[in-house]
Length: 362
Image (cartoon, rainbow, N blue to C red; front, side):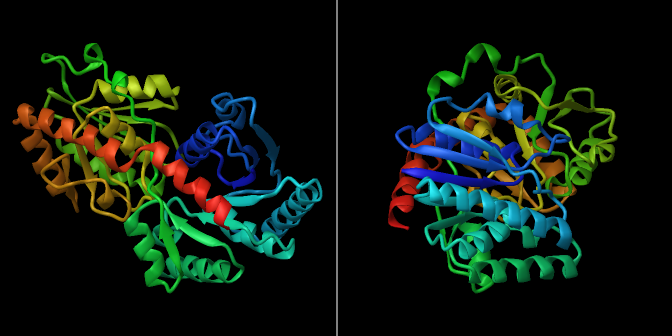
């Protein structure tokens, strides 16, 4: 099959999602039409992690993050031209749209080009983004309008699917998945008994990930020498991470990220919403206990009391961190369950098999 992926932004978790599909569906040919956010991650740095034999990249030059009638119209026209050319070359068996901007413009472009075999994966419901209701209402309207253009909405977690269904939008669920390999967990990289209790997160430093809450939690521990906080990533809200016990690493290679997660004691997510976080799944695969803010996406990963816990505010998170710190044996047991859960429910082989069947059905 020839599968066209339309991606904006081509960075972070969405790039990891597309990469996993391309790597695991090697018998299919993938054409990736992508935007560029150099301030997050250059596309050249992402492309090098893709296989070379079954993928082609096409730059979507007009695509950009913010909503703008003029710029989005230009992006729509460009996307229609790209799809028309690919269709004329018989290079379109299925179109897979990733994220809300691609989902809206992509479904409209496919409708205009008479392409009906279309899948849209939000990777995080955009109408949960803001604390301002008017903005969320606007995103809800865009999602409803986009669904009228056609295509099948495929959410990456059950709670995200339910959020779409509450809007009256038909949606199904295929869990995100990652490669699960026992050999990834190396005992010589796990935390040393004498080391600080390291709490880590890996994400863009943006509003969705709630760096202000992460900072509030870390600030409480600033006078406790035995605790340290690490944020792997970068972003426009970096200035909110002011606590002196927070280390911001910037963007690292995947092996470096995995090594840092493996050397940590606890994975912390303060996100306002998720699709299904690849970074948290990496933590599960490395047998880490997770402490996640109660939100869409996160609540599909935590089995309370078995592989971690959830919280709703900084006070709850602080209390639970102390509980984990004082119970190292419990951390180890929960970590083992995380590894088992990842293999059972979030294995990339199952994810890609389900998407392959869906590409054929549509």
